[in-house]
Length: 325
Length: 302
Image (cartoon, rainbow over all chains, first blue to last red; front, side, top):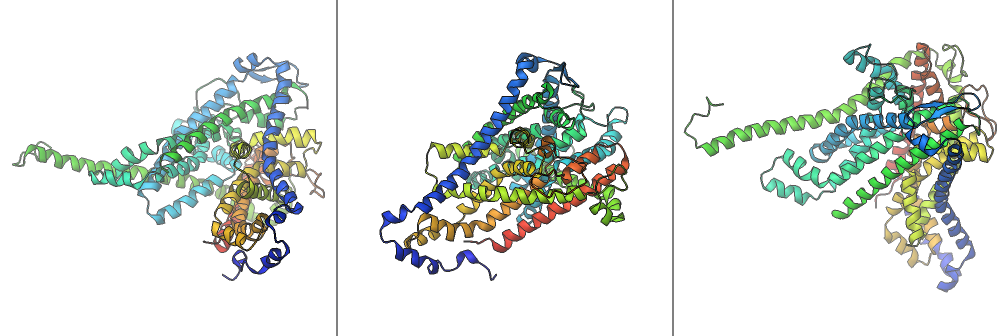
């Protein structure tokens, strides 16, 4: 309890400064301070430079890619078979990869949405402070597990010890979309749970009290008052969760496979946009080849999808914050 | 039901009675469902940790010194994580040195100095959008700009810059929250004593906001250290038998080793991957413990 430097007496070191300058005008025009403030401004604007850098890198090399492969072929092609060797030939249809990404997104929502929303209702409406105090850090730990470790878990546990015993060894591939979906679904539970819970706790207690006063039970208050009132926040949390699932790389690379196929069989091996990027960079694609430039076309696709989702989700969150404040 | 309802009680009341019985049952079932839903995530986490410990513990404690101090090997029994562990530590330090000052600077500017105008709004929405960009896209940024355009190659500096850029939005958000928690009475007191805005920021706001900012930074770094995709994309190596002497030297990282070993078919490499995962999880746990310690020990409650 001894060291609390910030609250040490504010008067001591400030006296000289007060003596030195007597007029307000002189003090505010100190050049040293202006330089510092300019430096702080540069720090803040650096984040804009990062965005510009991302967009520039993606656009420049994607443009190179689209000089070789027409955007129409890219967006409507049903075969993803990058050319080997010097990047000659090959088919660059993104649909199988989009299909794989969509499967993981849908599958992870099927897992993550019920678990996340049930957890949010439990934390917001049912749990005592002590239980909340135990559960919230646990969810944070789950959110903090490195994705490569979650991928290992999916490959070494979810497929062999969960999916195969239930659905049959011969039906479930070693690499399959279901294992990837469950793994990513678990990873988005903390996101959905924490944002949904925030939205539920933002619902004024007067609404709950009114419902209780009319004779509602806790379940009725939760399902008919709190959840509808927090619905926009819940939707925003799910969109953000889907955005995370779309951008997730390691767990799907390890567990869901690297086979770009147009399938909806969750027990087959698939390939997502992100996994395709990870596969290409492992295979020494030489700079400037079509295959190398395809990385950036895939990155651009991924960037646009996640950006749109994040913006939509952010808008919704901001709106519900306004409703009850 | 029809047997027990043949009594003298009026119909309406009887129906009410049975309904409330059903209602209680549904209420209990719903509470049970909530509990099961909540506990599933906890069980999944416990299963994950148990799976890793079960697969990797024997490998780790069988030869802890060899495992921590050997380089990678074709033979799983000789494979160690030295390059990954040291590489991750180097990456963490360099990343922190790059992103902490910039993140704090941006947070201070946005909270204390930024005028309320369209540029500030743009910068703010830009930062929140950056926080949602997938890590693999940051990898492409690192590959395109740091590794290739600036000719850093797959080096320690390129890796650290990529991780720093990725962590920046998180640190800025944490820093802003910590600065916002400093009450205005402190600022007004400093102004009343004749401090300029920068003197007030340097002597009052920054020291008071430091614990919160540090906590946020450590949490952001622990996320960065667990990241695989950006390092994979910029091409950091797994098979490497030297430690970096210089920022321009190539460097490996623990998650890259785990990914590489997980991808191999031999079960002995899966064990090594699990053992390396234990080390990584222990590292992250230690970092989180430090963050929580700083938060509890130094944060000022106004």
